[in-house]
Structures are given as structure tokens and as C-alpha cells.
Length: 341
Image (cartoon, rainbow, N blue to C red; front, side, top):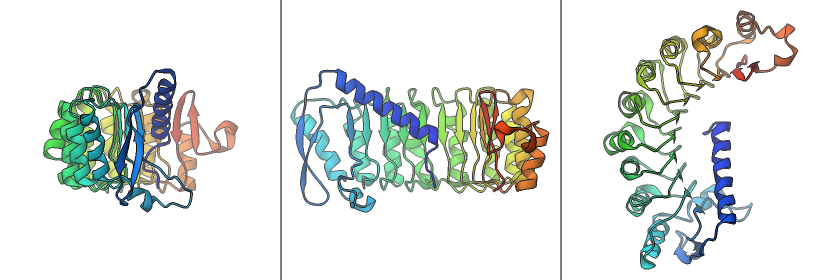
């Protein structure tokens, strides 16, 4: 399954391209250093560039598992030791450790090494073996960062304890973060409920949050609705790939009616059925739902006849609308995603 939305991947790609363009047009002083790998070898990396990408598959025959064994906590510690030897502060704008076994020890090194960074904007750490302590370190990093805009921690075993304590405090105090990806982190209702009642209730800058694939059930939506009632910054919320049903869909409609800033909502791959999809689609076309520009209801067991009925209700019947015969239903620049599966 997809851990990031298409738009999130595109956003990261655009920002990475911008960083690469900036590097090409700016005089950068190379800083080649030799770093140890977890395989017992050493590799030369240039720490002089603002983009450091350690998600490397040098050979198409190399597996993701082999990639994950390459740059571990020892390599991360060495990065900051080499900078200290040269009396240099880290000037990275983007760090990509995706698919490397960073672990909690590596997260501790990142927290200490980046605490004085005034340049870091994007930190990508999906599938890096973080657990509770690693998430607490990320919270401490958030607390002291004034520039970080994107933090991707998806597919790490946070569990509810991971987002308690220092993580909650750091997220609450941070004033720069715009995108937070916590997909597939085993947060459950408890973890997401804590975040909604705490830092997300009135965050200073956060515009995008992903809680996809977190084993969420209907009960969590009461917390989400309360958060939507007070949050005035959030524009994109992802709840894809959970176990949300009809009751959750109807509860979310109440929250959407009281929120005027959310623009995009992802609910694909849940179980809201025809009744839940009807309630959300009805809100989407209502006067109160006009602030939503994107609503994804695909793969919710709506059924063919359910789709037919919903499309008639929203005045987009399949048999009469040649431009909207697929699962993407267009309302000018607004999009409703709906299929029978």
C-alpha cells in the first residue's frame, strides 16, 4: 500500500528539485569525508551540499534490506563528528535517511547534531527502525528547530507511547512545521486521540498531517472532530487505510461543518460503505462543504449501485456525464474520488 499520498510525494520531489537547482546555481564548498558503514566498510560522502541523500540503491540487484544495513547510527554519529573536527555547523536543508536502520541510537545522534541547525527544512525518515525513544528524540529536535517544515516518520513502530511526552511537547512548541507524516506508526485510537487533544488542537503552522494505516476505528473520530473545531491551520488530513465505518463518516461530517480551513481529506481504504459515503458526498456539494477541494472516498465498499445513487444525488449521473465516468468526479477545480470497490 502507499504510505504517502501522490501529492505528498510530488511535494517532496519538487522541494528536492528546488534544492538541487539551488545547489547547481550556488557556489558550494565541497567537504568530502570518509564515513563508516554498518557493513564494516567506509564510504566517501560530501557534507558540503545542502541535500544529503542516504537512500541509496547503487545496484538494481541490491535489496531494500541491504540498503537498510548501510548507513546506521555509527555513520550518523560520524557525520557530526566530522563537522565538529572542521568547526562547521550543519548546513543541510534536506536529510534523507529513508530505508536505513537509523534506530533510536541514530535518532539520538540526530537530535544532538541538529539542535543548533538554522537551515534544515526537510527530514525524511520513513522505515528507519525508530521506536519509542527515537520518537521522543524527534520531539526534542522539533522543540528546538525554527526552520524544519517537513518531517516524515512513517512506517516506524511508535505506538501510542512514542507520541507522548517529549514528542507532544516538541510538536506543541514548534512554530515552523508544515507537514507531518505519521502513516503506519501503530498509533491506534489512543495515539491519534492524544495528538488531536494536544498539539494539533491549535498548532501554529501545521498544514498537512497523515494518520494513514494506523489501525484507527470509529471512536477516534470524536477526537478528530474536536480538533477540527479549534484548528485553523490544517489544510490536508489523511486517514486512509484504517477501519473507519459509517459512524466515523457521519461524525466527520459534523466536524467538517464546523471547520472552514480544511481543504483536503483522504478517507480511501476504509469501510464507510454507501451510507457513510453518501453523508460525506452530500456535505461536499453543500454550501458548508465548499472549502473542501479534494475528498477521497475510494475503496470503501460502496458498491456499484451505491455509486449510482450517490452520483445521482450530487447531479453527476454516470450515464449522462461523459467527462466524469471514472472514479474522479470533477466540480471545476474541486475533486471527489469515488468508486464501487
